[in-house]
Image (cartoon, rainbow, N blue to C red; front, side, top):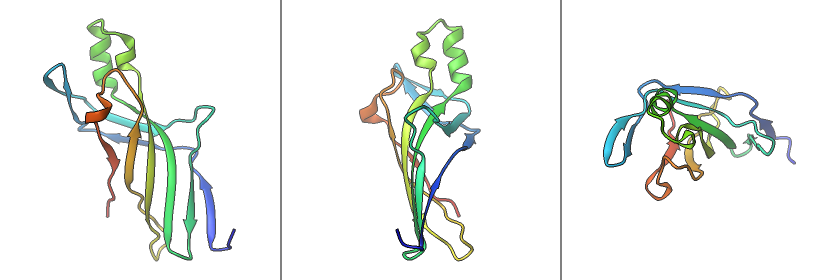
Length: 131
């Protein structure tokens, strides 16, 4: 491996989208409430990346859990199947430019695992680059 390439592991990541998303469920549009994203640190988790300073490019693969605590609480209160309230597993494939100040902003698609709340063929997730 070249001296200009640095491997890294992500050991903690927590993010929250307070406005959440709109879910379509059983023909109705529902607000999810806050969306929480965190690293899935399960036994087979592989949350690693590479910084290639030679090409000024960063890449990472992160296994994550997406949860909607407010929506999950509502489902539980209604007596819905507990499987509907469990977190959704995903894998984020991110990449982006390494900036002059050594910061990097990663963006890319998130592959979602099967989940009884989602129609995988109709559901998309991605991490969008900020500024």
